[in-house]
Image 1 (cartoon, rainbow, N blue to C red):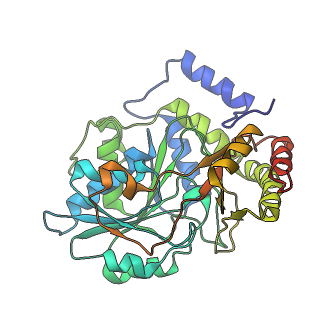
Image 2 (image 1 turned 180 degrees about the vertical axis):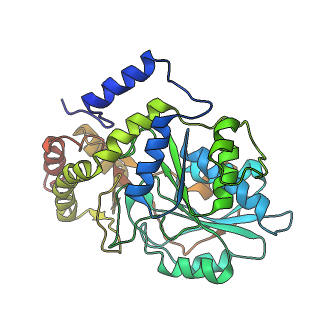
Length: 368
């Protein structure tokens, strides 16, 4: 039977057992496992100067948005320009902070329309969010220009983009801040966790205060006089989560190699199926996808039913946020594209051997 991701090495499991037996299931001052994971993450996945490990990417997003809310010279009605297609957890932290989301649609997943974003920006905009959904790298050349020219911080949600690169560029490199999920079934997973990467000293200090134990935050801060608003939110990660995630981080090239071998088999089958349209990056992307996205052109429900009968881990994408009851009153700028057939293969069974991928290919044969 094919194992489902996340899968951990025996060495990692032994180390986590030692952490449990020694009582190191939390930290309040300093933890070498957490510090090591933060250091290796910076060195491996980004060109930023600072990193903070927390209990989820949602906590990291909250810390970033809190910083923007308190440090931008904006009126009492701040907004943030965000994608309509992303996971709720990327946008929901705006709401308790009183920041209104302005949604932009995109004509195709993996491609972003800078003009649509520009239409939404106004004098109250405190930030722009982009998401590399499914691990499909966005071409952000124009968005970087908008962020720079209008002096509006760009935030990149890289939760699906571990190990992705385009030449020397990696997702998050050009942003004011980036956040990565290291939870659940992500390519780098500690069960639960999230990472902030930034080169802003001010954001780093205030995010430490928001997410970390006070003693730990004060020790790591470069400026001991920093104003620690928000201390005590208890958003810290754990040494065990850090060790689990480090197991994947240290093996990221091996993991990507195996997964790409599997995905190449499935991609070929998708391309050969006349009722499916594979979604691919508009860039010369290296690395791998988190999930494999595609469109079903017709007879969506019956097609999904057939694939599920054949034990394919196939799901319909339902995170169109403007349709969610919480967000229905928010501003939406759309180009009118219909994403009704947007689906994806949950690729948790493609990390060990090609057995599952070959089964997918057989089931995707348009003649069956």
